[in-house]
Length: 477
Image 1 (cartoon, rainbow, N blue to C red):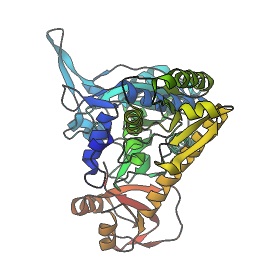
Image 2: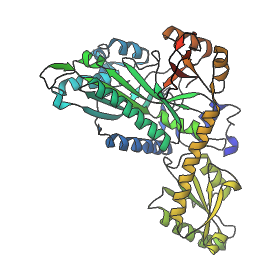
Image 3: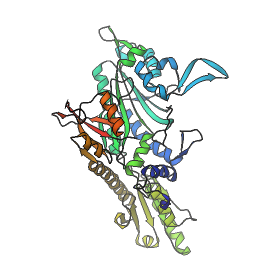
Image 4: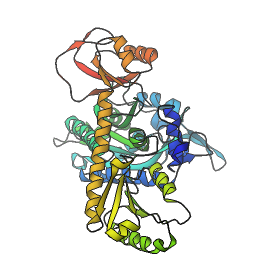
């Protein structure tokens, strides 16, 4: 199977499109720009969803659901918001065979309808904070689409919170950025750069936007999650008011934050290789696959019996699968599970049965180097330790790749050269017009202004003005 996968070095974009389909993650829909998420890909999304959902609930958030259809007038209440989303809107003008009195927008994001509801629900400081998250689908009419990375319809979560003070809302915005960073690093094994978006790149209607930026294996950036401090912009547009402790009416302070099925694409492009997916064990739908091996018919029964016993031993603590398909050779199965990125392969043959051992083969380390013989006794502990080792190794490999593809630059020419293969890091004091020029001339953008700053100052890489902050520049998906 792996022989038919285009090499990353030959055409990374083609490699990505092929791997998403060959690994059974998704397929193209008959509706242009949409995708069908297949069971294996959806299980990976469920793993992402469940790990994020657990973190949200640990930080005091609860789930709710809001309508898919939003009155057009709602979007028009916040000027910057409607201007930012207008080119991407899908609008319903007819329903039940009749023209609607007011057009309805298919949800591109839910700040407006949630703002409308919060205005009904919030009357007093005692009603605050409101900490709600929604798991939903959204529609943004994209012209150029790619499975998981940019599709007309996609799945995501969107958190929307309301607070009594500016400080609380800002703390919430950064808390959720930290939640995303923790998830990316510890579950997805993706080293991300948390930072603030530039004025040109921030969310339409936000006071400030924050992001986690990841580097893919082709050196391009992928915005993997965002958290927005909305100030009182939406509260004023939707009349979200409350009586404070002094009985004075105030506008609430709101936030929003989201991660989408784009995270599946991030996992694929951060870790995958020329043999297929490489999935971090903590997210992998299947963490280990048992492949029984025999040459002679008389060996079959004993090997299968041992393989089934191993499955029973592992099933309570490991997401394990027994591949006992008779019609396929062990070599074909090896390639199949390599393509699907299963972190650990457990091989059991006649010699293993006799010696009460199994062979563990790591997906992240192909060949003899990644193989270890272990005793069948205590296998759950051996597998758990190996999976933890693989998780850490995958992260360290991705981190080493990113660090070797970030260049500290002083001049605009150096920046142009650095973004051909990765990120550039430089002093920045540019405005919107400078960002527009940068994008036009280099196809790169300010990915983020990192939360961690070196201090001091230096000349802006583009304008030469005195700059107080370092920024990360790169080409992005």
